[in-house]
Amino acid sequence: MAGPPLHRCPPLLATALVWLCSSVALAQTPPPAEPAPTPPAPGSVSVRATSEGISLRSADDALLLKLRGYVQLDGRFFESRADRPGATTLLIRRARPLLEGTLFSLFDFRLLVDFAANVPPLWDAYLEFRPRKEVRVRVGRFRPPVGLERNQSGIHTLFIERALPTDLVPNRDVGVMVHGELKDGVVSYALGAFNGTADGASADTNLDDSFDLAARVFAHPFRALGLSSLSGLGLGIAASRGSQFGSASTTGEAPLRSMGQQTFFIFRTGNGLGETVVAHGPHVRWSPQGYLYLGPLGAMAEYVSSTQEVNLGEQHARLRFESWQASASYVLFGGKAAYDGVKPTEPFGASAEGWGAVELGARMSELRVDPDAFPVYADPTRSARKAHGWGAVANWYLNNNVRVATSYDHTEYEGGAVEGARLPESVVMSRFQVSW
Image (cartoon, rainbow, N blue to C red; front, side):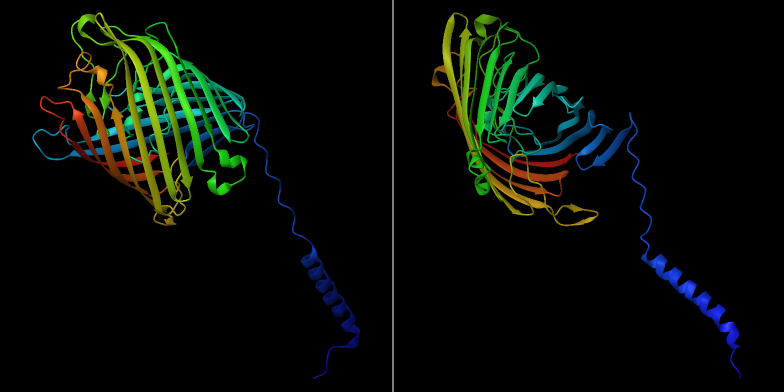
Protein backbone atom coordinates (compact mmCIF):
# COMPACT_ATOMS: atom_id res chain seq x y z
CA MET A 1 0.00 0.00 0.00
CA ALA A 2 1.37 3.40 -0.95
CA GLY A 3 2.44 5.82 1.87
CA PRO A 4 1.02 9.26 2.42
CA PRO A 5 1.80 11.84 -0.17
CA LEU A 6 5.08 13.64 0.38
CA HIS A 7 3.43 17.05 0.39
CA ARG A 8 1.51 16.05 3.62
CA CYS A 9 4.65 15.10 5.67
CA PRO A 10 5.97 18.58 6.48
CA PRO A 11 2.83 19.64 8.39
CA LEU A 12 2.84 16.40 10.40
CA LEU A 13 6.54 16.68 11.18
CA ALA A 14 6.11 20.30 12.22
CA THR A 15 3.27 19.37 14.59
CA ALA A 16 5.29 16.55 16.17
CA LEU A 17 8.30 18.80 16.57
CA VAL A 18 6.23 21.49 18.32
CA TRP A 19 4.70 18.89 20.69
CA LEU A 20 8.14 17.43 21.54
CA CYS A 21 9.72 20.83 22.20
CA SER A 22 6.79 21.88 24.37
CA SER A 23 7.10 18.70 26.47
CA VAL A 24 10.82 19.23 26.97
CA ALA A 25 10.28 22.87 27.93
CA LEU A 26 7.59 21.97 30.43
CA ALA A 27 9.78 19.26 31.94
CA GLN A 28 12.63 21.73 32.45
CA THR A 29 10.46 24.50 33.88
CA PRO A 30 10.61 24.49 37.72
CA PRO A 31 7.28 24.00 39.51
CA PRO A 32 5.63 27.19 40.78
CA ALA A 33 6.82 28.16 44.25
CA GLU A 34 4.43 27.45 47.11
CA PRO A 35 2.94 30.61 48.58
CA ALA A 36 4.68 31.79 51.74
CA PRO A 37 2.78 31.03 54.95
CA THR A 38 0.64 33.86 56.08
CA PRO A 39 2.13 35.47 59.19
CA PRO A 40 -0.11 35.37 62.26
CA ALA A 41 -2.43 38.27 62.38
CA PRO A 42 -1.83 40.77 65.16
CA GLY A 43 -3.72 39.71 68.25
CA SER A 44 -3.99 36.05 67.22
CA VAL A 45 -3.23 33.22 69.65
CA SER A 46 -1.68 29.83 68.89
CA VAL A 47 -2.78 26.82 70.93
CA ARG A 48 -0.53 23.79 71.38
CA ALA A 49 -1.05 20.53 73.27
CA THR A 50 1.99 18.37 74.06
CA SER A 51 3.18 15.97 76.73
CA GLU A 52 4.15 19.05 78.76
CA GLY A 53 0.59 20.38 78.89
CA ILE A 54 -1.52 22.89 77.00
CA SER A 55 -0.04 26.24 76.05
CA LEU A 56 -1.46 29.42 74.57
CA ARG A 57 1.00 31.83 72.97
CA SER A 58 0.55 35.26 71.41
CA ALA A 59 1.78 35.95 67.89
CA ASP A 60 4.70 38.07 69.13
CA ASP A 61 5.66 35.55 71.87
CA ALA A 62 5.24 38.25 74.51
CA LEU A 63 2.41 36.44 76.29
CA LEU A 64 2.41 32.75 77.23
CA LEU A 65 -0.01 30.68 79.29
CA LYS A 66 0.60 27.03 80.28
CA LEU A 67 -1.92 24.63 81.80
CA ARG A 68 -0.13 21.78 83.55
CA GLY A 69 -0.48 19.60 86.64
CA TYR A 70 -0.07 16.18 88.21
CA VAL A 71 -1.95 13.58 90.24
CA GLN A 72 -0.41 10.99 92.58
CA LEU A 73 -2.40 8.00 93.83
CA ASP A 74 -0.51 6.31 96.69
CA GLY A 75 -0.82 3.17 98.74
CA ARG A 76 0.73 2.77 102.21
CA PHE A 77 1.00 -0.73 103.59
CA PHE A 78 2.30 -1.15 107.14
CA GLU A 79 3.19 -4.57 108.50
CA SER A 80 0.21 -6.35 110.00
CA ARG A 81 0.31 -6.19 113.75
CA ALA A 82 -1.95 -4.83 116.45
CA ASP A 83 0.44 -2.03 117.44
CA ARG A 84 1.44 -0.97 113.93
CA PRO A 85 2.30 2.75 113.74
CA GLY A 86 0.00 3.69 110.87
CA ALA A 87 -3.05 2.61 108.92
CA THR A 88 -2.81 0.71 105.67
CA THR A 89 -4.64 2.87 103.17
CA LEU A 90 -5.00 4.21 99.66
CA LEU A 91 -4.93 7.98 99.28
CA ILE A 92 -4.69 10.82 96.82
CA ARG A 93 -1.30 12.16 97.87
CA ARG A 94 -1.35 15.15 95.53
CA ALA A 95 -3.84 16.49 92.97
CA ARG A 96 -2.32 19.73 91.75
CA PRO A 97 -3.35 21.74 88.70
CA LEU A 98 -0.71 24.26 87.69
CA LEU A 99 -1.12 27.56 85.87
CA GLU A 100 2.04 29.34 84.80
CA GLY A 101 3.11 31.72 82.10
CA THR A 102 4.90 34.83 80.89
CA LEU A 103 3.70 38.42 80.61
CA PHE A 104 5.31 40.90 78.20
CA SER A 105 8.45 38.71 77.94
CA LEU A 106 9.66 40.02 81.32
CA PHE A 107 7.39 38.62 84.02
CA ASP A 108 6.79 34.96 84.88
CA PHE A 109 4.02 33.78 87.16
CA ARG A 110 3.05 30.50 88.80
CA LEU A 111 -0.11 29.37 90.59
CA LEU A 112 -0.16 25.85 92.08
CA VAL A 113 -3.12 24.53 94.09
CA ASP A 114 -3.86 21.13 95.62
CA PHE A 115 -7.22 19.36 95.79
CA ALA A 116 -5.97 16.40 97.86
CA ALA A 117 -7.62 15.90 101.25
CA ASN A 118 -6.18 17.36 104.47
CA VAL A 119 -3.67 19.66 102.76
CA PRO A 120 -3.59 23.44 102.27
CA PRO A 121 -5.26 24.44 98.98
CA LEU A 122 -2.61 26.97 97.90
CA TRP A 123 1.03 25.96 97.46
CA ASP A 124 2.74 28.33 95.02
CA ALA A 125 1.62 31.82 94.05
CA TYR A 126 4.31 34.17 92.83
CA LEU A 127 5.35 36.72 90.22
CA GLU A 128 8.92 36.88 88.96
CA PHE A 129 10.66 39.73 87.15
CA ARG A 130 13.48 38.40 84.94
CA PRO A 131 15.30 41.09 82.99
CA ARG A 132 18.35 38.80 82.78
CA LYS A 133 19.12 35.21 83.72
CA GLU A 134 21.75 36.55 86.14
CA VAL A 135 19.20 38.60 88.11
CA ARG A 136 15.63 37.59 88.81
CA VAL A 137 13.28 38.93 91.47
CA ARG A 138 10.53 36.66 92.82
CA VAL A 139 7.69 37.86 95.07
CA GLY A 140 4.95 35.70 96.58
CA ARG A 141 4.63 32.23 98.11
CA PHE A 142 7.23 29.61 97.16
CA ARG A 143 9.96 27.34 98.52
CA PRO A 144 12.74 29.12 100.42
CA PRO A 145 16.21 28.16 99.08
CA VAL A 146 17.35 25.87 101.91
CA GLY A 147 16.67 22.13 101.48
CA LEU A 148 18.11 20.29 98.48
CA GLU A 149 15.49 17.55 98.27
CA ARG A 150 12.76 19.96 99.39
CA ASN A 151 13.47 22.17 96.38
CA GLN A 152 13.20 19.16 94.07
CA SER A 153 9.73 18.79 92.57
CA GLY A 154 7.54 16.12 94.16
CA ILE A 155 7.18 14.40 90.78
CA HIS A 156 10.96 13.99 90.41
CA THR A 157 12.10 12.76 93.85
CA LEU A 158 13.82 9.37 93.81
CA PHE A 159 11.66 7.95 96.61
CA ILE A 160 7.92 8.27 97.08
CA GLU A 161 8.44 10.32 100.25
CA ARG A 162 11.35 12.63 101.04
CA ALA A 163 14.04 11.77 103.59
CA LEU A 164 14.35 12.97 107.20
CA PRO A 165 16.34 16.22 106.55
CA THR A 166 13.21 17.66 104.95
CA ASP A 167 11.67 17.74 108.45
CA LEU A 168 14.13 20.51 109.39
CA VAL A 169 13.79 22.91 106.45
CA PRO A 170 10.92 25.25 105.53
CA ASN A 171 8.33 24.02 103.06
CA ARG A 172 6.59 27.12 101.65
CA ASP A 173 6.83 30.72 102.83
CA VAL A 174 5.82 34.20 101.67
CA GLY A 175 8.65 36.53 100.79
CA VAL A 176 10.82 38.22 98.20
CA MET A 177 13.92 36.60 96.69
CA VAL A 178 16.68 37.64 94.30
CA HIS A 179 18.24 34.73 92.42
CA GLY A 180 20.01 33.91 89.19
CA GLU A 181 22.63 31.94 87.30
CA LEU A 182 26.15 33.07 86.51
CA LYS A 183 28.58 31.89 83.82
CA ASP A 184 25.98 29.79 81.95
CA GLY A 185 24.82 27.90 85.02
CA VAL A 186 28.20 27.21 86.57
CA VAL A 187 27.10 29.08 89.70
CA SER A 188 23.59 29.83 90.92
CA TYR A 189 22.61 31.93 93.91
CA ALA A 190 19.51 32.90 95.88
CA LEU A 191 18.94 35.42 98.66
CA GLY A 192 15.53 36.14 100.16
CA ALA A 193 13.56 37.58 103.06
CA PHE A 194 10.57 35.60 104.33
CA ASN A 195 7.91 35.72 107.02
CA GLY A 196 9.54 32.76 108.75
CA THR A 197 8.13 29.34 109.52
CA ALA A 198 8.69 26.31 111.72
CA ASP A 199 10.82 23.39 110.53
CA GLY A 200 9.04 21.36 107.89
CA ALA A 201 6.06 23.71 107.81
CA SER A 202 4.53 26.39 105.59
CA ALA A 203 3.51 29.94 106.45
CA ASP A 204 1.00 32.37 104.96
CA THR A 205 1.39 35.34 107.32
CA ASN A 206 3.92 36.80 109.73
CA LEU A 207 2.83 36.09 113.30
CA ASP A 208 5.65 37.75 115.23
CA ASP A 209 6.72 40.89 113.30
CA SER A 210 10.14 39.41 112.48
CA PHE A 211 11.56 38.05 109.24
CA ASP A 212 13.88 35.25 108.19
CA LEU A 213 16.77 35.63 105.77
CA ALA A 214 17.58 32.60 103.59
CA ALA A 215 20.42 32.14 101.12
CA ARG A 216 22.00 29.46 98.98
CA VAL A 217 25.01 29.21 96.67
CA PHE A 218 25.23 26.19 94.36
CA ALA A 219 27.98 25.42 91.84
CA HIS A 220 28.71 22.95 89.06
CA PRO A 221 32.51 23.35 89.09
CA PHE A 222 33.37 21.08 86.17
CA ARG A 223 31.12 22.96 83.76
CA ALA A 224 33.59 25.85 83.91
CA LEU A 225 36.39 23.47 82.88
CA GLY A 226 34.46 22.06 79.94
CA LEU A 227 34.39 18.52 81.36
CA SER A 228 30.97 17.43 80.17
CA SER A 229 31.37 13.99 81.75
CA LEU A 230 31.37 15.61 85.21
CA SER A 231 28.96 18.45 84.49
CA GLY A 232 26.36 16.70 86.65
CA LEU A 233 28.34 17.28 89.86
CA GLY A 234 26.75 20.01 91.97
CA LEU A 235 27.88 21.30 95.36
CA GLY A 236 26.28 23.96 97.50
CA ILE A 237 25.57 25.40 100.91
CA ALA A 238 22.38 26.99 102.20
CA ALA A 239 21.43 28.78 105.40
CA SER A 240 18.63 30.72 107.04
CA ARG A 241 18.45 32.94 110.10
CA GLY A 242 15.61 34.69 111.88
CA SER A 243 13.77 35.07 115.16
CA GLN A 244 10.46 33.42 115.88
CA PHE A 245 8.13 33.95 118.81
CA GLY A 246 5.23 31.57 119.26
CA SER A 247 2.09 31.60 121.37
CA ALA A 248 -0.08 28.98 123.02
CA SER A 249 -2.26 28.79 119.90
CA THR A 250 0.54 29.14 117.33
CA THR A 251 3.65 27.63 118.89
CA GLY A 252 6.07 28.08 116.01
CA GLU A 253 7.00 24.39 116.31
CA ALA A 254 6.02 21.45 114.12
CA PRO A 255 6.11 17.67 114.66
CA LEU A 256 8.78 15.48 113.07
CA ARG A 257 7.59 12.72 110.75
CA SER A 258 9.10 9.50 109.44
CA MET A 259 9.28 8.51 105.78
CA GLY A 260 5.98 6.71 106.37
CA GLN A 261 4.52 10.08 107.49
CA GLN A 262 4.13 9.00 111.13
CA THR A 263 4.89 11.50 113.92
CA PHE A 264 7.82 10.40 116.11
CA PHE A 265 8.63 13.67 117.92
CA ILE A 266 6.47 16.47 119.27
CA PHE A 267 7.07 19.17 121.87
CA ARG A 268 5.00 19.29 125.03
CA THR A 269 1.63 21.03 124.81
CA GLY A 270 -0.93 21.88 127.46
CA ASN A 271 -3.18 24.62 128.73
CA GLY A 272 -1.56 28.01 128.22
CA LEU A 273 2.06 29.10 127.90
CA GLY A 274 3.04 27.53 131.21
CA GLU A 275 2.46 24.04 129.77
CA THR A 276 3.22 24.58 126.08
CA VAL A 277 6.62 24.79 124.40
CA VAL A 278 6.84 27.76 122.04
CA ALA A 279 9.52 29.19 119.78
CA HIS A 280 11.15 32.16 121.50
CA GLY A 281 14.26 33.62 119.93
CA PRO A 282 16.75 33.05 117.12
CA HIS A 283 16.27 30.19 114.67
CA VAL A 284 19.30 29.24 112.57
CA ARG A 285 19.59 26.58 109.86
CA TRP A 286 22.51 25.60 107.67
CA SER A 287 22.87 22.85 105.11
CA PRO A 288 25.83 21.64 103.00
CA GLN A 289 24.44 19.67 100.06
CA GLY A 290 25.34 18.12 96.75
CA TYR A 291 24.54 15.64 94.01
CA LEU A 292 26.19 13.76 91.16
CA TYR A 293 24.49 12.61 87.97
CA LEU A 294 26.74 10.65 85.64
CA GLY A 295 24.90 8.88 82.84
CA PRO A 296 22.65 6.24 84.45
CA LEU A 297 24.17 6.83 87.92
CA GLY A 298 22.73 9.31 90.40
CA ALA A 299 23.62 10.25 93.98
CA MET A 300 22.43 12.88 96.45
CA ALA A 301 23.53 13.87 99.95
CA GLU A 302 22.61 16.65 102.34
CA TYR A 303 23.02 17.60 105.99
CA VAL A 304 20.75 19.98 107.89
CA SER A 305 21.29 21.60 111.27
CA SER A 306 18.42 23.54 112.85
CA THR A 307 18.95 25.44 116.12
CA GLN A 308 15.92 27.00 117.81
CA GLU A 309 15.46 28.80 121.12
CA VAL A 310 12.30 27.75 122.96
CA ASN A 311 10.35 28.60 126.10
CA LEU A 312 8.26 26.53 128.48
CA GLY A 313 6.86 28.89 131.06
CA GLU A 314 9.87 30.48 132.75
CA GLN A 315 12.30 27.91 131.37
CA HIS A 316 14.40 28.67 128.30
CA ALA A 317 16.64 26.47 126.13
CA ARG A 318 18.58 26.53 122.89
CA LEU A 319 17.98 23.21 121.11
CA ARG A 320 19.76 21.79 118.10
CA PHE A 321 18.31 19.21 115.70
CA GLU A 322 20.50 17.50 113.09
CA SER A 323 19.70 15.27 110.13
CA TRP A 324 21.43 13.78 107.09
CA GLN A 325 20.60 11.60 104.14
CA ALA A 326 22.51 9.83 101.35
CA SER A 327 20.90 8.17 98.34
CA ALA A 328 22.06 6.47 95.17
CA SER A 329 20.24 5.37 92.03
CA TYR A 330 20.91 3.56 88.78
CA VAL A 331 18.84 3.62 85.59
CA LEU A 332 18.86 0.07 84.25
CA PHE A 333 17.74 1.06 80.76
CA GLY A 334 15.92 3.73 78.82
CA GLY A 335 17.30 7.00 80.17
CA LYS A 336 19.74 8.98 82.29
CA ALA A 337 19.61 9.99 85.93
CA ALA A 338 18.97 13.70 86.57
CA TYR A 339 17.92 16.08 89.35
CA ASP A 340 14.83 17.02 87.35
CA GLY A 341 13.83 13.40 86.78
CA VAL A 342 14.48 10.56 84.34
CA LYS A 343 13.33 11.26 80.77
CA PRO A 344 12.74 7.97 78.89
CA THR A 345 14.54 7.81 75.55
CA GLU A 346 12.24 5.04 74.30
CA PRO A 347 8.82 5.83 75.77
CA PHE A 348 6.01 3.35 76.18
CA GLY A 349 2.71 4.29 74.55
CA ALA A 350 0.11 3.57 71.89
CA SER A 351 2.31 4.94 69.09
CA ALA A 352 5.67 4.00 70.63
CA GLU A 353 7.47 0.67 70.76
CA GLY A 354 9.74 1.23 73.76
CA TRP A 355 9.37 0.18 77.37
CA GLY A 356 10.25 3.47 79.01
CA ALA A 357 12.96 3.56 81.68
CA VAL A 358 13.50 1.58 84.88
CA GLU A 359 15.41 2.97 87.86
CA LEU A 360 16.51 1.37 91.13
CA GLY A 361 17.55 3.31 94.21
CA ALA A 362 18.57 3.05 97.86
CA ARG A 363 19.09 5.52 100.71
CA MET A 364 19.95 5.97 104.37
CA SER A 365 18.74 8.78 106.59
CA GLU A 366 19.00 9.87 110.22
CA LEU A 367 17.65 12.60 112.50
CA ARG A 368 18.91 13.40 116.00
CA VAL A 369 17.10 15.49 118.62
CA ASP A 370 19.05 17.60 121.11
CA PRO A 371 19.35 15.58 124.37
CA ASP A 372 18.51 18.77 126.30
CA ALA A 373 14.97 18.57 124.92
CA PHE A 374 14.23 15.75 127.39
CA PRO A 375 12.45 15.52 129.73
CA VAL A 376 11.47 19.19 130.17
CA TYR A 377 10.48 20.20 126.64
CA ALA A 378 9.50 16.81 125.24
CA ASP A 379 8.04 13.68 126.81
CA PRO A 380 10.61 10.84 126.47
CA THR A 381 7.79 8.27 126.58
CA ARG A 382 6.15 9.78 123.49
CA SER A 383 8.95 11.40 121.49
CA ALA A 384 12.03 9.63 120.13
CA ARG A 385 15.57 10.95 120.59
CA LYS A 386 16.75 9.61 117.25
CA ALA A 387 15.33 8.12 114.06
CA HIS A 388 17.45 6.06 111.66
CA GLY A 389 16.04 4.68 108.44
CA TRP A 390 16.98 2.93 105.24
CA GLY A 391 15.03 2.04 102.15
CA ALA A 392 14.92 0.85 98.54
CA VAL A 393 12.81 1.91 95.58
CA ALA A 394 11.98 0.83 92.02
CA ASN A 395 10.66 3.35 89.49
CA TRP A 396 9.19 2.62 86.08
CA TYR A 397 8.92 5.71 83.88
CA LEU A 398 6.60 4.63 81.08
CA ASN A 399 7.04 8.00 79.37
CA ASN A 400 7.38 11.65 80.35
CA ASN A 401 3.86 11.62 81.78
CA VAL A 402 3.39 8.33 83.64
CA ARG A 403 5.44 6.88 86.50
CA VAL A 404 4.83 3.79 88.63
CA ALA A 405 6.88 3.39 91.83
CA THR A 406 7.21 0.98 94.73
CA SER A 407 9.36 1.63 97.80
CA TYR A 408 10.20 0.04 101.13
CA ASP A 409 11.26 2.10 104.15
CA HIS A 410 12.38 0.81 107.55
CA THR A 411 12.89 3.20 110.47
CA GLU A 412 14.24 2.43 113.94
CA TYR A 413 14.12 4.74 116.95
CA GLU A 414 15.86 5.50 120.20
CA GLY A 415 13.41 6.34 122.97
CA GLY A 416 9.83 7.35 122.39
CA ALA A 417 8.14 4.63 124.46
CA VAL A 418 7.31 3.96 128.11
CA GLU A 419 9.81 1.12 128.14
CA GLY A 420 12.83 1.62 125.91
CA ALA A 421 12.51 2.48 122.24
CA ARG A 422 9.53 3.11 120.05
CA LEU A 423 8.71 0.07 117.90
CA PRO A 424 10.42 -0.01 114.49
CA GLU A 425 8.39 1.12 111.50
CA SER A 426 8.29 -0.78 108.21
CA VAL A 427 6.14 0.41 105.33
CA VAL A 428 5.73 -0.51 101.68
CA MET A 429 4.49 2.36 99.54
CA SER A 430 3.32 2.43 95.95
CA ARG A 431 2.52 5.30 93.63
CA PHE A 432 0.80 5.77 90.30
CA GLN A 433 1.63 9.23 88.96
CA VAL A 434 0.34 11.13 85.97
CA SER A 435 1.82 14.53 85.09
CA TRP A 436 1.40 16.83 82.14
